[in-house]
Length: 446
Ligand code: SF4
Image 1 (cartoon, protein in one colour):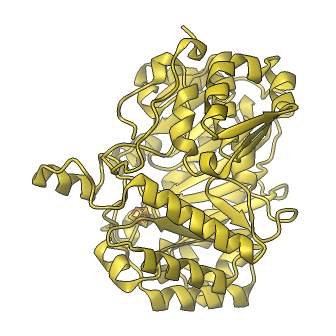
Image 2 (cartoon, rainbow, N blue to C red):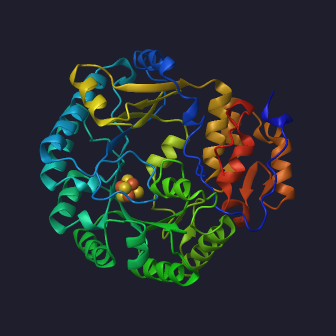
């Protein structure tokens, strides 16, 4: 059965409460379909030469945080000491040793690297230098187009920011999430408002090519007033890029654990309709001061000169070598994820193994669906790209669903372009499930 023969998703009502489950589509096929049975596929993929014109990128996971936010669904550690962090950095470098001479590298140098977490800025400036010097020795960074780095404001001071600049960070992402002291506290964020301003000012002084401010619409205790204030303060900071996520409550969050204890079905956050309205408001305010909305989550000041290489390369089928506990990578169409437990990850790497926990090799059809849905998040998609790369006319392939969404005012089809309306863009992750192959549909989405 193809996606074509399935009905589109039922329309949501206006007041669609936030329930537990995953909303955000970060990859395809969904992680729940990756399996330990396919780990050998990764070993085969790294033993092959790369396909021509395939960029190589890297992802490095830093799993440490000062506190665990109540909405966090990542595996993070808040209790690791300096010796354990040193052990972790050495494991990451040893892991890179096992990959760097494999045939899949094929003489390529990485074009982008993303430091995610957790909180990469949890590391001290000395630790950061140790880690990145070691990485550069193993796989040179001289063709790097972007070094993206996530920072939590309370961990960023001028010394560390200068170290980040010196090691080559080009895109610094500030995990602000909100400015309101009460909201930050109730949601268990580690930083307060003062730390945001202090760190931001220091980052501007040091000077980065691109600063991104991350916000979340709909944290616990959010109101129209707090949200409007957060948007106003963000605009005042004048960052090159603003990224806004809508609050979701996956099952492995503290908020969900509390919902279970209380027997609640509805999460203690705003409904989806309200969260979409808040993002719509933010986009509108940003557009008033000449930002351009470039995806369902981002607005940038200067679209011609503000790239996000990591996202665009990954969404167009680049390879990504991933390092660190629970990190996700992709090599020649095979997805993989490392061990998600700190001890297991370190022990396996120290024993000279690849610490891969589960994997999945995509069929050509799955690769097509993956790129199609990820690129739809940009709000505009050129069908010629898919004709050239996959030999598929996506308007025919997904015709029934596209036309249904067009009737609902979510998108328009025009002369080889699929263009999402603002209404569609604000709920794109929900719409994407309509393009999933039947075997990948699950009720663990909201
Ligand atoms: S800072 Fe990010 S990774 Fe760390 S606990 Fe909060 S949400 Fe999770």
